[in-house]
Image (cartoon, rainbow, N blue to C red):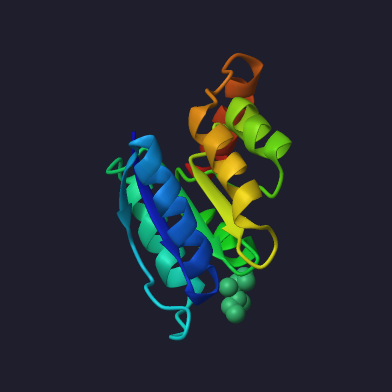
Length: 147
Ligand code: RB5
């Protein structure tokens, strides 16, 4: 699996921890920035870059981090084909893969610690979409996107 990862300045430190986790798991990834917690950037810029790369099929999944996770999730969900899920608990991370086939995970560095974030990323990366009745529902979202 190839993962696109990105954060604004509010998510740089948690992004670093998640990158270390991805390395330890042997997951291939590309970092779309930003690099510094001291240099403010606009979260939509990073969220849209990661989301467009996932929507274009260059990456199977995306992980986005800002201070709350809310800004990046709002921006990511504007990109056609992106189902971004803001998850700050393990149950939601599992359920959003099984039920929503989410392809972008959003996290807030100012909301959760690195230990919980690692558990969330682990379960989100390894849980399959359940399909069936859930596919019917996801298809309705896709149909809405396609007008
Ligand atoms: C940046 O200060 C902050 O607004 C951003 O990281 C994020 O929380 C926005 O939703």
